[in-house]
Figure 1 (tube, one colour):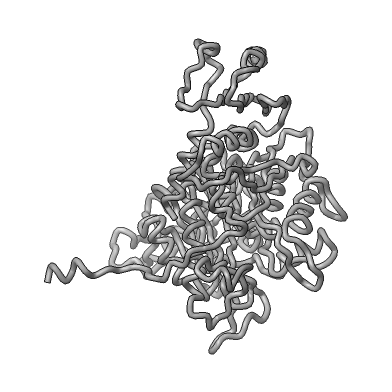
Figure 2 (cartoon, rainbow, N blue to C red):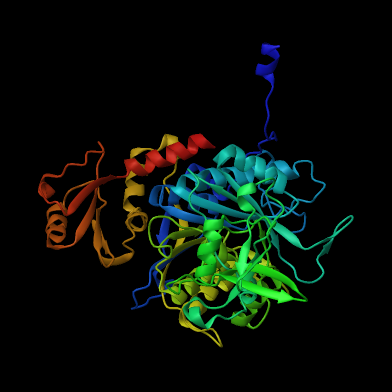
Length: 548
């Protein structure tokens, strides 16, 4: 019996199909290169956000060096694998017959295996980007929700599952299924570490329900009422007691949800509402829109989300482009709601959000508008390819839709009020001639020569202030990043002199074959931290290579 039990396995089993990347780039070293002409500049104090054009697998590989353990919230809207949503998979085993991928139809024998192989690689990379208290939201529908949940249980751990949220995404007729009219999708929610405190602002629908007024508590906005009598708590004698109203003892046998002490305190503070209709009395608790300081009340979110519809997402994009350029974009208010569920011990409006299936850029617009609405300093990282799509007209995802949408949101267009903020635009690129495990000295030199933008992203010092053939210096408002990327030291003294002029905190990166981090010229300078390249980048890449 014991022997038999050891052979039993429970979990998701599928044929893991190797994925072929174009131009054999899996045998080169991925990097991020800035496209300076596409930067969106600003003089305000808003964060500088990051757009990355390229395959999200390669982008996530680079981000595992720049952002490992730095992301607070991930939201993704991956392909649903409906058989008609354009999901493609490049099957490495039959690359000679299938060189550019094709849509995977519903009756394909490897339909689910392709999709799961595609998602697993990316979710494994994404998990390592999350902080210990980070959270991930994944939109999905019935085609893959069962498989995705088992996959996420395997990657994040079953105990890290938070909720399978039902999102009512249509207010009219939905898609017709075998027996029902479907008007919902799902959003899977997982944490990386221990569950943190999830709370939500009241949605628009809930706000409208707080329509009663209480002049005494005007600062708390309107209120709604909730019943206090109950029969659902079982036999609880301590919750059965009479209440005195206008000198008369009434409801002698009622059972309440509150203790007598709490009830008396609420009556004293005018936090309950008495009514009498046709001789029948009622007592209900007042639930105010805001707290005593005038801040909107937060509470545990429901597992069903309403009030944000796909039709609104289409309108969000139409309002910017004045035509439909993208099919079924998510509504920006849905992303705002999900983003604001994240709370930890810092300001709730100061966190980093990643979307590596960015599509039309809904997540970016949502974060920009949130920052404008509450003065927050959230930063987003959006990743999407630049494949051609068709929605009546042909468009490229990043250059024709996502990037312009972010630009118009920041700068303003038509009736869109400008939000402010800045953006740096990067593309995935590749160096070297060998794969990560077989990198030669020449490959390492080439990686070091081209790693500057990645190091700047890692330090969040995105503005280039000096560039020579030997070194680069980047900055933000608070610190610098200085990179000496050559293997020879011909200009190292000049580099040291430049660094010593910098009065703020400085992260110094120097080329080193031995991965030695001590540089005598900077010894004793407490504001200077010395690191090496390229070996730490390669070590991260090796871990990823072994993962897949």
